[in-house]
Length: 414
Image (cartoon, rainbow, N blue to C red; front, top):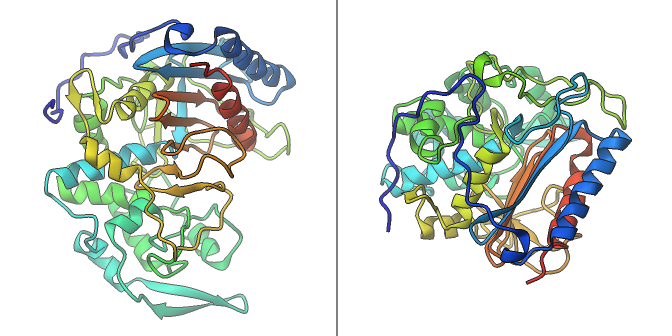
């Protein structure tokens, strides 16, 4: 078994260079995929570009350790004449979460924390958190029945919430606290969250949340490094993900930034995103990173390989099995469109539990996640298959993800 990857100094980037090493390539038919169906996939995405659904996209499909398909479609942005390119840079938002979840489990493998430990061991203010029970539109604070654990954070059962998940009174408190500011460091962010009421008792419900942002702070406390430095040293540099991080330098970004429409093409709502070249104070473990298709493909291939890539062990095989198993017990309330029928949730990934029920094909054991701007990846261990969709189309993300899954699985022939 390869030893755990250790920090290595990355090679300096060339000004406009595409430095991320390419994964091995293979013709579609050599790995059991249909070339004609893959072309059909591109044609469908191109149709959506022509309709004005999105400016452009990068799609990648890998099977049996090889990249079987890579295509660039449309433009990098609505105000740009630049064609989409393989190394275009995208805001991946919540596709940051699986990377940070792997970082936490690396620390578990190093014996530096346990996932059933209370969060307050690392951030003491969470020992005083209270649950906000909403009755008659008002919040009534009650004590926690038990403390939040690291495992609760990984599985989004902590009771922590998001300002974006609904119009409820607790989400309103999150919005009023302005915790989305990129000028707030992870320590301050965690202290603000600790003072806000939990939306439910820890362990009682699955609620999409800022839990992974709090995990990012735990990484900092345990490792003694900033989150960005830890991820670079232990995941990004060992995987040679050269264009991934919490910002990208202007010199590297030149002519490569993918942008959304200024107004949603379906609703007309304004779309305002952070600058990818501005270095933030906040290194959001829940949604602050940017990446490219070739970069994130290396992360996906590492997961498909059981935790290794190019001889670098990033996470242990059995640890990854634990992460991609369902962690929602029978008494955990799961009522959200973010987790479709036939699925559960592991430690940082949604996990398919049944071959049926879901509205699209897949295999039991498939795991995945996506980002608010429409990016998505998934790994299907049974088929030895992974796929990656890179777009900046927030209002169209569920529509595009559904189409993408259907079309990728239609390519599987053997």
